Image 1 (cartoon, rainbow, N blue to C red):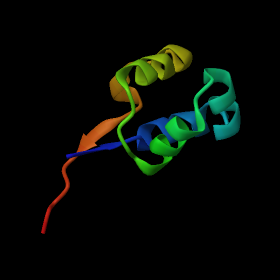
Image 2 (cartoon, helix red, strand yellow):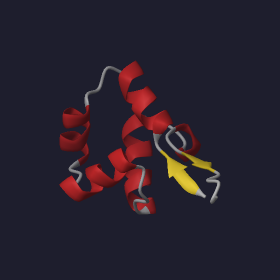
Image 3 (cartoon, rainbow, N blue to C red):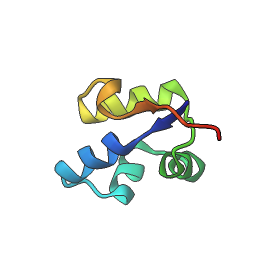
Image 4 (cartoon, one colour):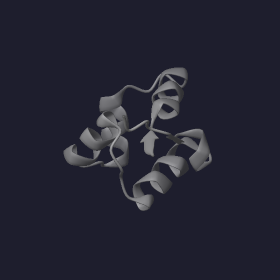
Amino acid sequence: MKISYKKLWIMLLEKDINKAAFKRELKLAAGTMSKLNKGDEVSLSVLLRICEYLNCDIGDICSVVKVNDM
């Protein structure tokens, strides 16, 4: 299983928020932003801060996708 932040990037586009402003407003570390861009896991506290900033539920910004290991 892997996490996808595709919903987050779509939401930012819909709200006309660029990634630089998003990173700055939430005071995200460069490493955290890199993890989000790569689809790596970030801490729950970061996801909750993003939800509070965007006034949404955690399921609105990420989803779990099944990865076929073949």
